[in-house]
Length: 464
Image 1 (tube, one colour):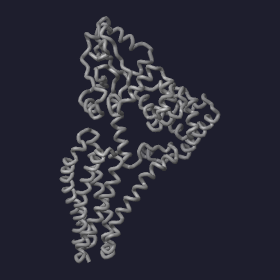
Image 2: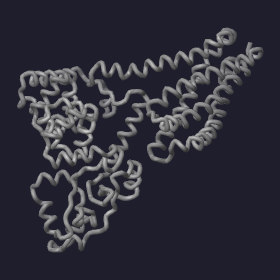
Image 3: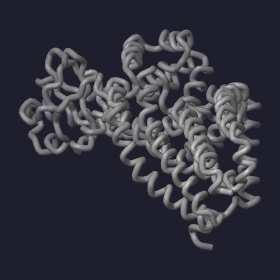
Image 4: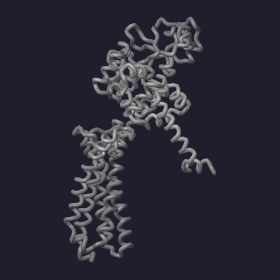
């Protein structure tokens, strides 16, 4: 069996038994409150596998497991979990235990988790933290998630102008665990007001004399503001081959570092979130409470019932036409589906350009003009193709002309809606990723049904 065949092959009964056995053993250890046994079971596993074991438990058993395992392992599981699941796990912890676990995480992740907790739970945890650490978390939690302030970590490797190369190198070779939090970042040189005035490369440190001042080998740093948006940060990392940028407040004080990894992860998370919203899924996980998951899904499914009734009413109005030319019914779903695909392409482009900051709601008319141009070309091409299919299949050129014209016109309508509606929803303060899909589907269905049936009604003598 080749490697590809091995990857595609279903799990063997032995593998399934082993999976069930591990779950049973973890559950037994939780029930027995056997901390040593739990650690022996979970510690050798990859974090993703250990997390699966955790999320397979009931909420109460998850609480027990995170209470019993070593703090480092609990923190690693929280960091590995999807954000919604991690927030729920922290929220259910005793505040003292939550602080122990959060202290193992970087300040940016601490702020993200605490910022999403209920105010009462967040305050209970912050009150248990060291005042200085709590102040950092409160400050980070104030920034928007997609800004440099929201993405940065507060831990910065910084030195005064008077520091020497030897002092920095001694720190590097020390056993100070706090240095691990800096993720290998470059040392920054700050003045007496905590403003960054220089950055020192690791190569420069190794080449310089130990007695030399950092001010002699530093270069001027390129800084970003706490309010710089994710799109701007992506552009900077594309332009410069840096591992991170120092982040400054309005007064120029150095308050953190935003890393390339943090910006990349945020961009991926944003793309995934927007994709899930378009499917009306949001941040759902199957480990969430049953009724919560059901309620979230029903909200969209119930709305879609109403939207589909509206679309069906168009068909009902043309029952006589459908009865006379039954072949039309074959092409109705084709017209609506192909138009919907064109509209979804337009939605995707608008969402991407909005996320990159290229377009704003005020650009709706310009976006519409560009989409109409593309829609006219693609609509004509698709209309001709389906016209030929209908002609050859049913042997009636007039039927082909009706279906082709309807698809061409509906494609123009679909791309117009797909391009403009996200901008209009943004202007109205609604979530364009979540609401554009249902609106597009309903309108293109109604328009497609209306165009096919109304054109067929006008051409009825030629179709019979």
